Length: 206
Length: 206
DNA sequence: TTCTGACCGATTTGTTTAAATGGTCAGTTA
DNA sequence: TAACTGACCATTTAAACAAATCGGTCAGAA
Image (tube, rainbow over all chains, first blue to last red; front, side):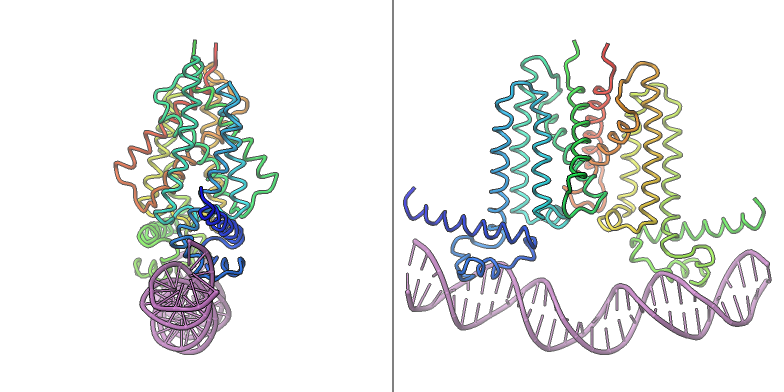
């Protein structure tokens, strides 16, 4: 990489960070490009030199967060050799990421449901990557004769949807803006219980 | 019951049915008390002879639907002796009820999240009844040595939340107004798969 | 290459006004 | 006296319009 593109990435990174902060404070829709530019002491038009439009800037913020999470997740999992323990860790790590997103204001009705196609793609992509990670764990479990599944892809998808569903149910019951420690403990207790039963349900019966 | 209260219940029942129909067409918020009264050829004030306010009328509609569902559900389950099969039936019956509610327009962001306390109570009550039904099934499974759970109440609650979560995830992905046959099949396939794994996870290991 | 001010059409916001809504009540009806 | 009603009220919602703000563009300066 040359100096230019490095500089460009630096500047783009600064913009992403500034946008990330403001999106976290006010939400993406309530944050204007003018505000982001003013915070960086540059003109609004400059933002459009680095990002074609607001949607792509938002996408960059989302994908930055997703990449960070997937990175730490892989590290946290790969070193562990027991597939069941891997699934347990996955569930709790994923929940921790959820808490982070909620407390950042990144999870809300409008952020989830009526997403623009571009952002929806990012989420789909993220979920696919998650699925593949879980698939790897399941396949490992099959190979060492610990698990027995019909279809690792379907099972991984189901596992993630169950976790997502539990979060969603918990989230819908209380109208959450942020998660405090008590709520988080309660939710992780349920997620752990569900994961344990799920794992038992995958176990190979001798 | 005397003639008077029977007549009163008849009339109240008519009002509930009329309201049910209109709520289904336009939603509770977009249906006015005037409309309901006009459809029954009575004055708006008369509605307030039978129901203290709109909220309680809506509550009556909700509880009528819930009672009907719980009734058919119990019938559909009680005659079956295998607990695992009971859980499977429960899951699919519950899904069928969900489809019914969605296609009636009874499930929507505003109907779910920002409910008035009164209606929220009805839902809590309904969920408690569901939980007790599932608990009965689980206890039966424990008694015949088929299941092994830490806590039947917690497990029942978890089972229902997982089902609810899967519906919620499916519902949030597509922005549903009604469920067609394909979507319903897809959803029941997933619910069945989750239920099967869940049941396996409850099985007593010899 | 990087950045900007001036500018555009479209959307959002604020404000005002009229209509409709949920709810009440004294009194009629049968 | 239980069942019902028309007239009425305070509050919410709908409509309409103006002003501000928004995302985005572009010729040209640095």
